[in-house]
Length: 89
Image (tube, rainbow, N blue to C red; front, side):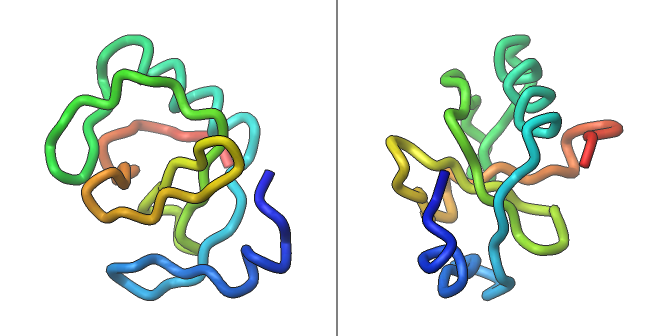
């Protein structure tokens, strides 16, 4: 989990939208899709490793992985949510 003080100042490096923590149900659904080989990063590469945690833009359109408690705010490693159907909140 990312410290709330850090989360308050982080934003998407592309859109500059605020970031928020992802819900557990949404994280589980995304990890299930990753395990099925159905998730691509924004740069078109398959995401093969499950997410320990993630942050999402406030509109829920883009996810950024959190590795060992550190947000990975690299645009190429982001995951667009338009590739998913019916993600839980």
